[in-house]
Length: 367
Image (cartoon, rainbow, N blue to C red; front, side, top):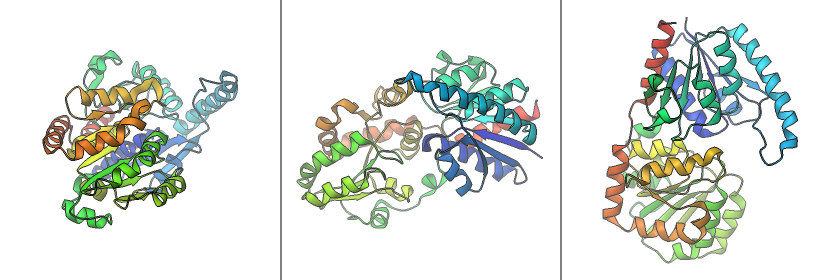
């Protein structure tokens, strides 16, 4: 019986690909044992069990670059996590360890490599993170979604797979009109979807709040605005105080398949999962990269699209002045929308989860 360990998480951008890989393994090998290892207190500790998989948590956390004195505790947690990782391997005895990025994948894959267990890394971004660069030296396979990744990884172990996305997004059969009705908006108006990630995005929400009256004056357009839970009350209050009756705000969009299908234009952060979804769904987008991420990788992700005329980028620092004007001008321009849609679709890599699991099977059979 196949035993597979999947490690990582922290954000939806790491968890969704991990679950897509697990689901594909389960589809092919229903008897396979799959164990997730995440970081205590992070999103994966809820999302993974909800998807029907077992998960163990490590006390690992990220280094605090601004307050170095706090890192004593971080180092202690890392050492404890490495000890726990060795115990997990001794108990579970996996045939392979897969790392999808996030705090837990570092100690877990390092421990697996020391025991001679084959490891596979899935790097979602166009700019590799520090952990994955360190793990790559001994990884048997590195699955990537962007060209030019031999800058970071040994070229002979790189496989271009793309990023797995939630299957239900690709299987949505609704028309634009049906999707808009499902989202509770006008079926015939041009629609902009604003998504700041599962937790929301401060800058995107501030730009929206500042631009509500401007949006209200464009009566032929409507906006579906996912503000995130943290900013929900503040955004709802701003909307109620404005004249914009063409904006539907919500804390969280549960039916993302319908939301994407309803949209003519998407305004989003530039996380790797979001970009893969836009590519596979051929959605024109205005990207506002988050500056609060390691190595500024979201800007690099966005530029990979901008350089192929496959998206428009508004920098976080300019979002207050430019975001709402840019999205309103873009959604009204049929030619621009068509060009962005064509170009972003050309960048899509299909069947990523299947390709990654092909690699997993190959590594298990040859180890």
